[in-house]
Image (tube, rainbow, N blue to C red; front, side):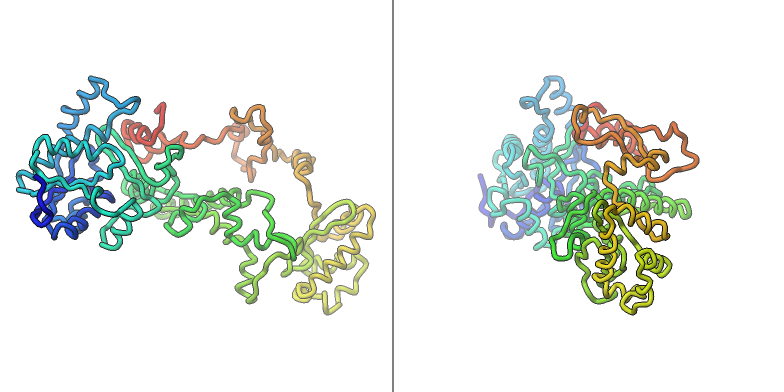
Amino acid sequence: MAKNKKDIKKIVLAYSGGLDTSIIIPWLKENYGNPEIIAVAGNVGQNDELEGLEEKAIKTGASKLYVADLVDEMVDDVIIPSMMMGAKYEEYLLGTAFARPVIAKKLVEIAKAEGADAIAHGCTGKGNDQVRFELTIKRFAPEMTIIAPWREWDIKGRDEEIDYAEAHHVPLKISRETNYSKDKNLWHLSHEGLDLEDPANEPQYDKPGFLEKFGLGYEDMKKVNPGIIYGALTPFGYKPSKYSNKPSYDICAVAMSGLNAQTGERDGNPTRIGSVIGDMIGAEGFFAAVMIALFHKQRTGEGQFVDFSLVRNLVHINDTLQYHNKKGHIQYRSGNHNANMSPYGIYTGKTMSMVIGAVAPSTWNPLCDCMGRPDLKTDPEFATLPARSRNHEKVEQIITDWIMSFENTQEAYDKIEASGVPCCPVMTPEEVWEDEEYNRLGWWVNFPMYPEWEGTDIISNKHCAYFADFSDVSEEDRKPMFAPHIGENNYEILKAWGKSEEEARELLKSWGAVNV
């Protein structure tokens, strides 16, 4: 017979320490007249999740915590018989389902021993866990009152649960961005929540906090190997922020670094930079950061977490931000020319475009002589770099008019180059590929095409694959090879991190890997 709320003085709660059961303790105390709450955690093989559980339960309002060792019972009475009979639901192997009755039976035993008035559980009703728990409780204690908060409270989802937890100072291991619900036992691991609510989505392994849920975060790895160098290369950084879980491509990182706003014609709109500069420079910057960490380790033996942000790296190289800070004005688009260094930009003639950089006296003076304008060297408007910067539009017009006086722009270019002024042609991609000198230097490597791209024109197999030459690297080591596929080396990495062969296999299987 179900008791009235005012008559319930002691409640046994099925407790996992997850979001659902963590907030149930203060909720029961608020809504059932402050009863004693006895938390019960059933150990069905999730040993690592039981650490710190007693402290958390008591801090949240429980009077005590039982940790019931149910592993042997789980194996002998459930897993082995299920395997022998081939028990499954459609093509879905049982996991969560057959752990619940084992836990519920123990709840009844403890409730009777404690003289409890009711048993509570945190099952949401999404699946059949309410039925599994309650049928088992009724089998062994038909008179026992069962409390199912999800059938009583007005909380509608996990975001509202977090709101409640924050308002009641309930400690949580998850955030709104890592708000997955995990169920683990000796046989099984399942997840739900966030992107997993849509079966078409895959888990976002790169989200901050995701690896920590599996005991693979930096602090976890540091315990195994204090000297580990652990790196995260993400758009906005691994450290939690309002941007850290924002979906992003290279173009997003460039946009949020200020570079797009400073690229394009003076009176025009922002312009996309013609290369995936964030990704490319980011990869090299991340490499450099890891090497610095390794150098530090070599000297001190200390490992560290390298948190590398694509956006931060681009902000770091965005020198125009310095002019904003130093001179008190914001530098936006200046077209093909640098408003703070003149002449320094792209100049287009009748047959070709070129870049010219003549900012120092040693390069500006020869350019003046080349153009037949020695007077510019002493003219107060143009004699110094600050003066030319103030009058950069006039400088640009003088140089452009001179270049445009040539029917064949190559002649103008040859004169500038012969004078020792830094200048280069603006080369097309085809010209870069076909450049005689680049080819002579061996910059190009022909990679085999990815099998999935055979028969398409999605990408060329000709790449400038190496950013430097190393004297002691053999030609054999320079042979082209495919980059590893996502997760290809996870098994080896996990073993290197201290996982046994079997632990590595089981962990990968729990992530959905096959053929491990």
